[in-house]
Image (cartoon, rainbow, N blue to C red; front, side):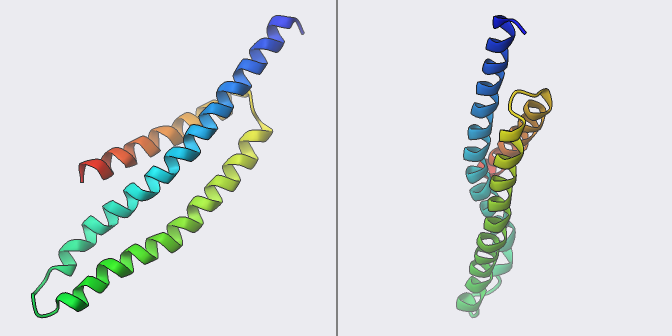
Length: 116
């Protein structure tokens, strides 16, 4: 292994580390975007009549609370699993491919949340 090979491996590890940090940061924004998408879907069910306005607001609150609980647990599992998996395999092409797919999905979710 030459000095050039070692610097390439180091550069690949740095790139993978940056992709991992970016992916973890964007996952928080994707979490918020999914919450907005779910609330947008639940809102028409909440606005049914003026008589039941207080009760219908509970639908939106319940959906939000459900997502914070379930989605938060999923995001925590994603963070722990992602950090564990990728830190063990920094510098591999498979890690970059997986992180690129994760970033793409997160950006798509954020874009959908922004449009809705």
